Length: 70
Figure 1 (tube, rainbow, N blue to C red):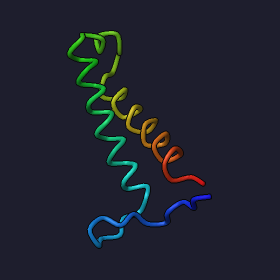
Figure 2 (cartoon, rainbow, N blue to C red):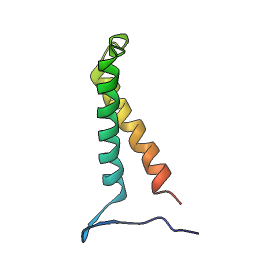
Figure 3 (cartoon, helix red, strand yellow):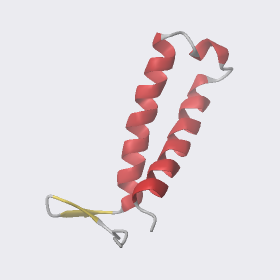
């Protein structure tokens, strides 16, 4: 059984897992909101910046739970 890392080693620099998950969540949310805007689906949202923020939180939590939780 693999244990969850307490730090992520990136070229000798130790990063907390939440920082890595937050960065990936931010990138995925940006990509997803660009796709929503491209296909004009963002017009259905009353406040698209709040949708972006909600996607960042949701995707960060999902990545954190999939990659770093035992």
